[in-house]
Image (tube, rainbow, N blue to C red; front, side, top):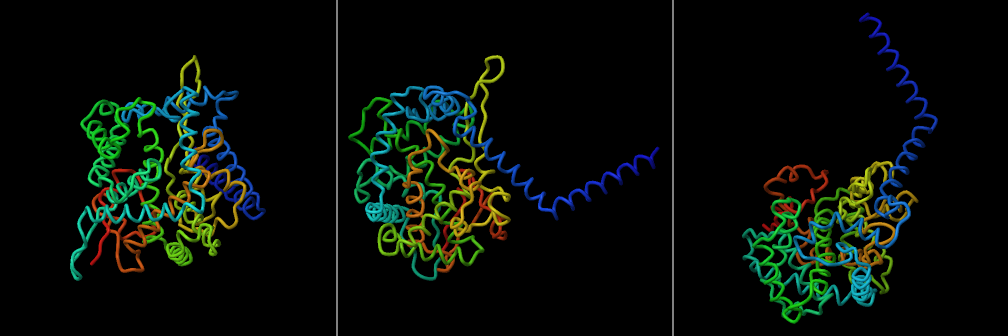
Length: 417
């Protein structure tokens, strides 16, 4: 009996190997893989673009998005397109956001760059000026990035001058937002907290003319989607392109982009403007602002089910992006396949895609990353990034992708000397 089982097992192995060998050498294996990848992408798209709802209306789409986002409504009091089922609030949010986002054409990139540069200079000064040569100097990268991106966001959407902004209030607000976001994922911590009070007081210092206000007019309705989804993408793109990539071509491209920004957007050097956008897309591909897009859909027996589109999986699928899918390589965007276009969803997909997808998001990410690289330098400058604490193993594993949970970035230090 044992020999019979063994013979059956050996026969099954031989058949499997033979079939696999045949499929591989006839090209059918790749075709099957490609077909499977296409079906997987279509499944994720159907969730992200509300196709999973079947016949849908604006109300049903808003409901599908609002239900999973109630934790954010509870933590931050947001009343925006992302948390409401009211079409009136949704359309007003889009109108307000679009007015400012559409002012990010090539002619406005210099203004945005200059505002970001001032914001970074003031933030770094807050954490202390550099020490004399020969001494070690460090900066907490996550805290610096959060603060200067928030200050620039206030300039862009609320016309706050970076030179006159209350930097301490900006840092307090960015820290409180980060902690509240983490708390929002833990039901027992998602209610009223000291951080909610701290955030409100910090915003009143930053935007005194905006308070008191109705919930639908609260500045957080704009700040959260514009800033919170941005700062991690900026930090990760800067560190990946400036310190981690092993692709020499990618490294040279990023260095040239850093030199060419912001003039490459609309100037004589427009070719590097496209390379700059490709660098932003590659950063957003490897580290999408939202790993998963959640939708509430009707389930069995009248129950509501939460489904999600796995954006991270789509962005890193080797069948779609090639065997180097886990590497930062902006040049891949010169030849984009249909599957690559469908799989790329950093700002959502279909109806209710984030307005930033119209161009603002890509330009903002790479301008922020370039401002960091100009001010702080990159690996080629002799400076470094130290991954302490829970990420210490990254120091000896340059091939590893970076983690991008909010708490995982807290120990990263920019180091000189």
